[in-house]
Image (cartoon, helix red, strand yellow):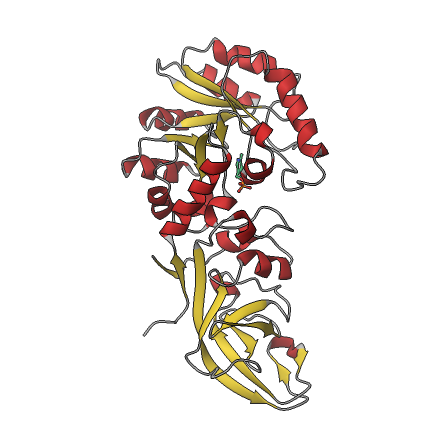
Length: 357
Ligand SMILES: Cc1ncc(COP(=O)(O)O)c(C=O)c1O
């Protein structure tokens, strides 16, 4: 028998979350963001659940090619574009769209003399200061693309730094103003919105929205839960209690003996640790479900195991089912307790975890 830890992916939740995107951005096309193995959910599995989307945004060229080879005819956008001229041939062969965000890419494209419509998303840096041309450089970059016969459809894009701050709207307003000031007289389709903007800034929806995290059932906001947004958790990471320790007052728990028991206590040892993708920095008190009942982890997370408090768990013993996150235990809550975000937990699922649907 193998270790009891595994991840369950709920395909109907993925489909449902896409319908929530459609509900919010009914006039826009939807580019489902499926980079990083679809945020840990499995590329082809997620693509199938999102097949009614209009496009896929991805980062890894090999993954984009595998999508094409699996028969998806959608727009497939590489959101960091290409890194060398030699990759352009693959973009052409597999009809992949590319972001162009710097002048090096523009030059590589200008030197590529094949007569074929390569669809391009030209990125404007409106304040995130990560990728994209500055407002001063952008018009020149656009002119170069327009005069390049290799280029097919041009779409203009940017990315928001603070769309999750839905109360202080000044960050998005500033970036949107910058974007509009450069692009409003240009007759090209546009793409701006990630999940947070899709949910809370309808003025950013434009021609294409690019949601990621909400498709997987997690909230992009720190103070609005996924269920309040009608999002359904798609990944449930589950395991079992594999041992029980009956401890006395003064006993200590785990590496470093960082947790000291202050009353007789029943502690469960769960198969699942940081080598499975559970965050090592999750402190005592991080919520977890045992037998469907909410309890807490105690002590340090080990590589393959962690300790849970079974004091309040009726019939908690070896074999009791555990949910680290997913159905009944929002990944956002676990992430917050561990001082991180759900994106990191979902993407960190270890390769050794068996995934089931
Ligand atoms: C360019 C771009 N668009 C869209 C997204 C999706 O963002 P989110 O997962 O917050 O919806 C990302 C994610 O990092 C991104 O880099």
